Length: 144
Image (cartoon, rainbow, N blue to C red):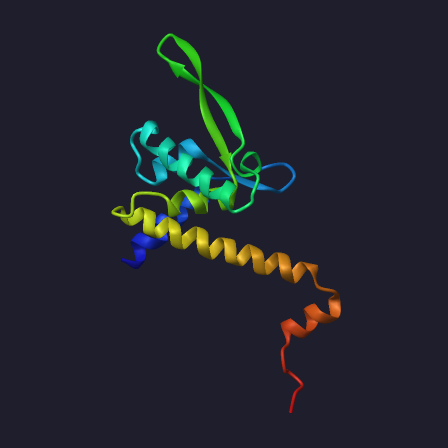
């Protein structure tokens, strides 16, 4: 079971994209495959529920779910399809609204919860001045 979890965790890391400015995003189309949704129509319903949760939590949906168009081969021609460049928060909301019967959904929930927590801790740590950072690195090191 541990090997399966490691493999699934890598699946989410593998599809993560990094922009030139260092920000990260996940393609909704790639996330749908990773979460074992074979039909975009079914996955788009999950995205819709996640967008509602995003809006109700006070976030700007267009910041976490920016819509993009991708060109794909469609036989002898090309056609544009809808996709989203999802933030980590958007992915977290998607897995929270996914099919709970799927093991990969539970793994996705764990992955995005842990990664979101790690990012929040890192962001908080980076906002501290050097003395406070040093104190957190070596807590009670010199305490008697």
